[in-house]
Length: 450
Image (cartoon, rainbow, N blue to C red; front, top):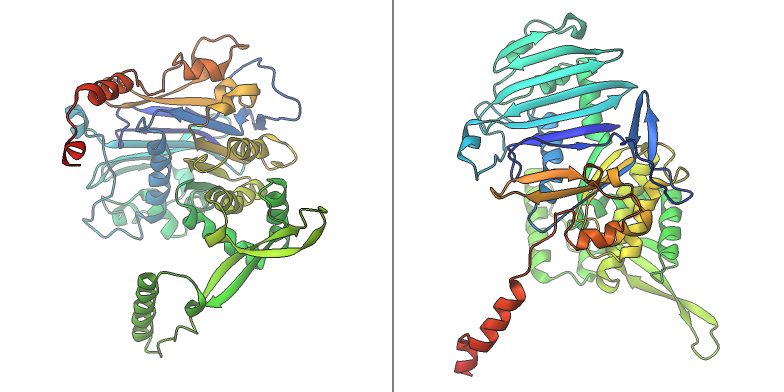
């Protein structure tokens, strides 16, 4: 379970900003059937948080920061060679930031114990790293400053492991490589329980949805039911494997795939497959065909998901894989651009899945970036579940919660947000006058040539 995530001097973040999943002591009245919080030991945590903001305000960078931390924890000891850059991108609009490392810290619960882990780094090396554990009180497990390590005896680390930690690698990652039990468990938490996707990269997470639909009959039934209930006209779902030669794939993509398969065969010293041997998966959907005169159901028609379904239908289908997986296992899921190409009512239902104790029995957590202000209406979200990103006068992202703003609990959050009362909206007052001025008095080379 996620308690808190902090980031500083990374991309559009300059000063340290914190997303806190601890519930605020609110007395907001929420709709019946929704369960917004859960107990994790002595902590009351939120199941959901929505992040709003204007374009380029830093919403996506919050998700990127989480995913950078996740990736660096997993790969710094195994993928990076000595002297290779860390891949971090520091804030570029403040000369003072050039001398400061980027900052990442996460507080989470693993096996009913709270851990606080973080590190600071620049493009070349790790400046500092720390791990603390809280049972009855917080205790230090290790602290690293450059290549100097202070390690608690409770961690039980072999003396030579710190010496094997490269400047551009995390000590925690190195410990896990040497099968240190706690370090391996923490890495496993990052790898399996902390997830992140972009709503614009359908094909990336859609791959998981397709594969699981093919191999898991229970999952397929759930997806079919959800598609039917989503009112997109689909009553069935199938996965077919067809030869590449029988697809409508553009010729340039087929040629690229052939070159890849030829190179792979040459590397493995095998025979290159023919176009008939290269099988591609195709998702098919089943639609009912009716007689419009009688309303009688006559038969079914098979559609190609990729070629014949709408972008919104495809997006909803692809999202169902990570959605169901997260709810089944109690994972933490960060989603960027969640509402892209989705109808607002579908977005609302996806959020409600995390707020229902029946559909979310394992206390999975959802943190998503969105422009869908409609979610602020009808009290779907608590004030502490609504976050805003806004750039200050120096171009740096600031992150704050609606719970931090003095507002009446019966106020219309939807209307007030669109009016700009909470910030985090674009300032567009000059757009229309500029266009009007240009259309009236500007020169138009294209029109003159015509």
